[in-house]
Image (cartoon, rainbow, N blue to C red; front, side, top):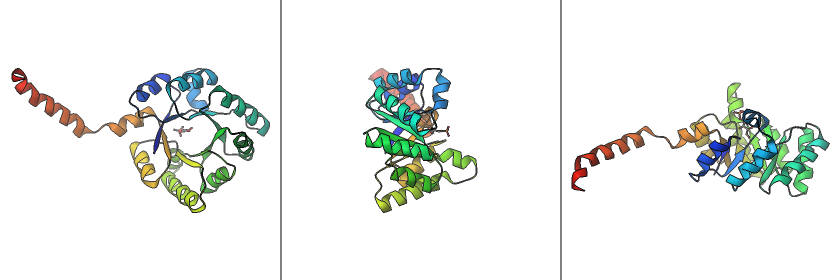
Length: 216
Ligand code: E4P
């Protein structure tokens, strides 16, 4: 199970990378916009910190320009995964880029049939958006489970990247189902390793130690 950080914020990336818990990074136009930085500059900066997949999304929506942008993004670093929207043109671009040996990530996936189309187009990763489905009263995690079943049934090699993660239960459920990757914001990383009993335990050990400190 790989954990990706869903951010373009360099300080956050450095902080969690130092703990050895970040296997890759996902960015999207909204996350880049938050940082007011050029996509190329930020992807190159991230690549200096993280030795793993880094998703860089195309902005174009037509086939020719998606391929052009995809090739450009991929030229920035060997670990760049070109993120393409789940549209007919996105799938065409995916097929072309995949044939050139470029890693791809089909994003904005909200149904099983979309995930299968992405796999058939040769996508390296497929990104079903769990939280955004939950937001509209659909079961995002059920989609992850269905994709896992079908990819296993037919031996599709495309990896399942559970995206739009909102809380730790999304991560634990995704792990149990067998998603290959979960990408999450820093706030969810924090919630994953925090436990009140750990904090209480540390405090008790230190309080007890204080009582015998003088004889150490
Ligand atoms: C990552 O690849 C996705 O773009 C991201 O997880 C979307 O998350 P959101 O639904 O919280 O914007």
